[in-house]
Amino acid sequence: MKKVLLGMSGGVDSSVSAILLQKQGYEVIGITMALSKETDDVDAKKVCQELGIEHHFVDMKNEFKKHVIDNFIDCYANAKTPNPCIECNRKLKFGVMFEKAKELGCDYLATGHYANIEYSDKYNQYVLKKGDAIGKDQSYVLYTLPSDMLENLIFPLGKFKTKDEIRKIAKENNLNVVANKPDS
Figure 1 (cartoon, rainbow, N blue to C red):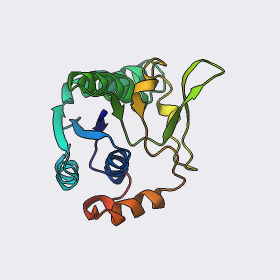
Figure 2 (cartoon, rainbow, N blue to C red):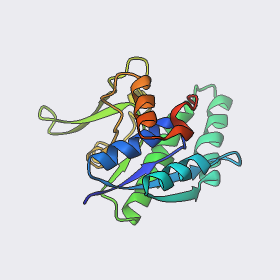
Figure 3 (cartoon, helix red, strand yellow):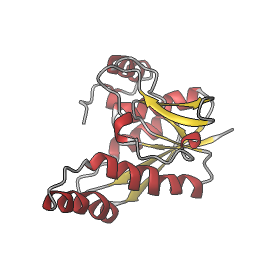
């Protein structure tokens, strides 16, 4: 059975991603990154317990401050327009978390991003593509991902058309703790 490390915020997207990955036959391990003092892993931990999956909580406050907050301030101070999501994805979610996946013996890293990865015969490699959900595509904050990493990434929500479909799956699987949670 292939193992996947799933970034879990405690929201409906990552929680439903866990369900979908389990249904596809993966052994799922959840991970929540503490990015600030306010980070709460309670809902992610509850979902993992309900689904019977292992859960890890890693303190990333210093890394978040260094790579995201300080970078944001430096960019503004130098008349640049920063995008903190891109830096967080590059350095933390698909940097540190990708290394954690390897450390835990996982074959893949997954997140609840609305994006798709497909193999391109034209380019002879995996490519990042837009998610199918209108108004929810998140590929633009993932464009810095190295192409050689893409074959080890999974975005279970990429083919869904609406957020309502995701909430419905949460409700059908009795994940009431996250089913009606507002978007972050």
